[in-house]
Image (cartoon, rainbow, N blue to C red; front, side):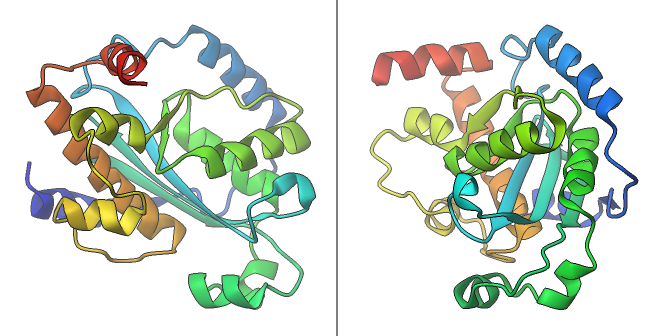
Length: 233
């Protein structure tokens, strides 16, 4: 599947979970049980359902008070888009000027957005027990770990796959780090940068490219991805 087909597939999907109800602790407990039993490492990459996501935040340190402002996600099975999710997250303080300029977010829309626990619960309902994918995922992991404990009193237990896992194997001499550079390297047009859903779409397109590249190398499951990473580290 070429990039144009991938983006056409993206544009045809609907938005989900913009206005959920109160967060459901019973659901979160059930999800934790599902995560313990779900095994994704042996599923072929071209049949593996993942949720590619991105967060816009006020900074980099949730333990020092930085907060999530928006969540964007794209559900992908193999290299085919199935659905999308986007939610703003309530934030009742003035935005840092750089964040406001970078993301285009406004205080008025954030003050009317769902509470953090509600937005996060809707995201977890969208994702279910599917593995999560993010570009250089340490940022997303830090915020999800902190938020899961703060709002739901549960660990963040999702399998989190970093896109760098893929291109470190497929292109070990690839010097690119930033999302836009990785996309340009793979002829993926840059649109919607620094918007949570826009960045999730770009990362999903990048995921699709590297799933195909790894399959051409004979690497067909996550288990094989991890085995190859262990060798090259």
